[in-house]
Image (cartoon, rainbow, N blue to C red):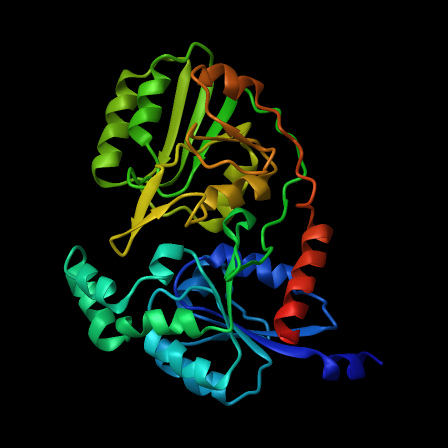
Length: 354
């Protein structure tokens, strides 16, 4: 009976060559043991290293971009999901000609940009890299790739719409409560002023009266690292600051994230991707939302963050220290593994049926 059920399962390919290893890890876990779907994963060496996949399971293939098309076309899939379509557009477009395609969209404005707008962005930053995308990876094919995709998926229900279908991937992994003393504030993510207002955090810390431990949970370098080191020297002895000058492994990231008393996520209201404006909570999901769900911890977001239905996302108040002390939102209903998996399977069934 087991063999028959496996034979009848629908075959899905999932591609992740670029970033978002944590999304791949969640999807692999959610798809485990399914009799309805059979996943084959195509990932880069970089992604395998991020996930410490030293001995890959049978359904995981480590590939280079130039090998991907042949690998996909040598098999038959009912659906191909592209985890990140920020490069290799020429390859993905060829794959889309013979397969039903779903693309996870991380930047809505980028996905809706015209060829002219993308071309003009080439010369604004990172010119050598962007010229490579233009001449070797089919950058100007990106608009058609997104437009012609059978499905566009987003990972935050608040930015889903008529064209963008919500794809549930994030679930609560950490069930424990913290008894950390002093209270531990974790600011997750690469230390980049463009994404989060670290200068503001360092300034606010000067007024804190209680004992706290701060962890900037991501690699700090350049100007931001200079600010942090300067602040550390002037810091009150009641405060402890921990930061990293090397990339944080996924294992350490998860461990420290789960040890947090509360997350502080001072997102910039706007950021850029490929020199195209994106707005957190409207056109772009913040990874900090996934961090809060995974850790099962309340998270302080900026006062101007868009309205949402997440009870564990708290808008920052003027008395942020008191807010951090009292933050105790524990309502993660709808984000337990069994519930997310049920919805995950329902969405996949819909993608395969349409």
